[in-house]
Amino acid sequence: MKDQAKEGLAPKYEYTHGGDIYDKNGIAEKNMLDFSANINPLGIPQEALRTAKNALDRANIYPDSGNRLLISKLSEFEAVATSSILCTNGASDILFRLVFAVKPQRILVAAPSFADYERAGRAAGAEIIYYMLKKENGFNIENDIIDAIHVAAPDIVFLCNPNNPTANLTNAGLIEKIAATCETLNSLLLVDECFLDFVDDAPNYSAKPWLERYKILVVLKAFTKTFAMPGLRLGYALCADLTLLDRLKFCGPDWAVSNVAQEAGIAALENGTSYLETTREYVKNERDYLTRELASIGMTVYPSKTNFIFFHCPYNNNLDGELRQRGIAIRNCANFPGLEPGYFRLAVLTSAKNHMLIQIIKEVMALWQSRS
Image (tube, rainbow, N blue to C red; front, side, top):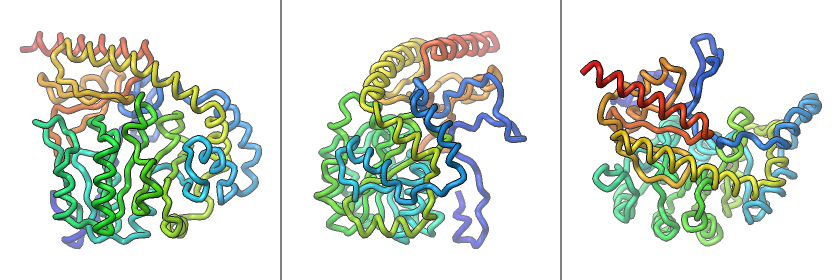
């Protein structure tokens, strides 16, 4: 792909995420089953939903720009000091604040991985350096990333754990080695843990224990996926470098989080631990079902401990198109750097929806076979 910025051309914006279930007029398609966005299948906690609706009564006043009550609740939930928490308008807001605060010349991103790391870097004029994940190694991040970081000497390293879209996990030991390497190079390390709360043994993978040791470390989290609040836009960063957090505050508006989002987040955290325990058990059972069924019909399914599944379809690259015609959206991963056509990602949804998906995939495959 040509680098339009270097050629002096204004880049053409293109939406590159899942969750696009809207028609050309911006109207959500009725009865669409959206497996393309990895949202908690249990939905937004009912108390958070009621609180969000009630908070509309306070739409006539400015929100607390310091998010003080929300941060106090997050401090308890994450076991992190209040001074080390910054709340913003979704997790992606942090990415763009970070690059404009740091003004990096080079960033290192794994490929394939979440598109907004690269997008944020390009918006700030940074050179993008890929650490390519290898199909023959199951798309895992391996120890050779340390060498890649030394060679690239990037200003920021972006890692997603679990990685999106491949669902791979990187253990905390390797994360700690990466953080130590970044510290020697004076590089920032952002570890995106937005999907980690869906993982049973999350402490074995979280970078949070290293926050105080490595001031170059930023952990990214959000209510978007775990508490099913994508429409409310609520994310947060954990970082022990208070000077950096102040710089991030300068790189965005003071009222980044609405009253509705703040109050819904506080309500979600009230019983957040038990809600996520229930979620993990439900997701595990449904993920196991989807994995078995997809494998039984010939798909190459990659291991997952989170709320989405990454797989390769060897039969037809237009699986998403066939499903869309039948009212189901899945994520075609062909536009991720490092992936070819035929790779797809789907969310783990409710039991009824998951069974419907498998049934329709089988019908599509039967149609393909009848045409051959």
